[in-house]
Amino acid sequence: MTLIDLHTHSRASDGSCTPSELVTLAAQAGLSALALTDHDTLAGLAEAREAGTRHGLEVVPGVELSVADGDHSIHIVGLFLPDREGPLSEALATLRAKRHDRNRQILAKLKQLGIPVEYEAVTALAQGAVGRPHIAQVMLSMGAVGSFKEAFSRYLGNHGQAYVPKAKLELARAMELLHAEGALVILAHPYILGQSGRPLIDTVTRYRDLGLDGIEVFYTEHSQAQTLEYLTLAKRLDLALSGGSDFHGTAKPGVEIGRGRGHLRVESSILEGLKARLARKV
Ligand code: AMP
Ligand code: ZN
Ligand code: FE
Ligand code: FE
Image 1: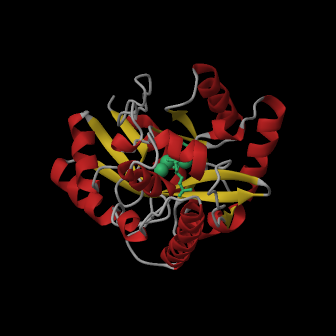
Image 2: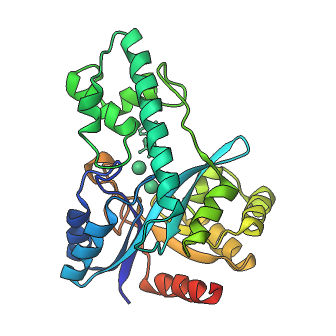
């Protein structure tokens, strides 16, 4: 039984590795498959796929989207995206354009606070989706903050002085876009719902009725108890299982590819289960 990782980020969004570096790391870690799931962009997929062929490692093309469910914000991961450009790439291009508008609003607020960040320095840090982590990085290199964490707690985080909310797709629309591409829709890191027991069952049942295909049961930040609860829930609701580290390279210190904080184990049978799910849909 080999291990895999179905949630990772490259420099196409806010990871620190190029897609091929990511595949090399995965191969070195002995993984047999890797999904690249950058935020709002497919820009890294071609390079990752090519590197996968070189290393004999299966690359699952994916994407991670921040979506709105009423007042809540959740993340979904789309897996098994096709090669061709379609309505999804157009929707992602719109999201990236809205990111630029938002980033500029954040920079305007920072300027008022006496921190003049050049947008060119920010956009230089990502090939695809540009966001708050890149702004934080520039603030850090300017010496405007003492740490990445401080950039978020004082300025960029949801309660920070320069916070601007992000434009998000509605959950149903995001699912529709991903399903139109033939992709599976996975609820990423369900612990961010902050729910358990009956409320969790009700929420995820509603997502399943909207078309959710699976849950990211195995995840870096999940406790054993959470993993067990999500596993039971997936069985109960007939949802597929997924798992990944959310590796971002040096952009998320302490999280290793395939291993998370050391206790993550996603077996290759998880990928087989997802493929069986995919086959059942067509
Ligand atoms: P964005 O998509 O531009 O809103 O940026 C979201 C990313 O910022 C997340 O994926 C995290 O990596 C990072 N992030 C969000 N909140 C924090 C925080 N409080 N501390 C550190 N990083 C954060
Ligand atoms: Zn990220
Ligand atoms: Fe996420
Ligand atoms: Fe992620």
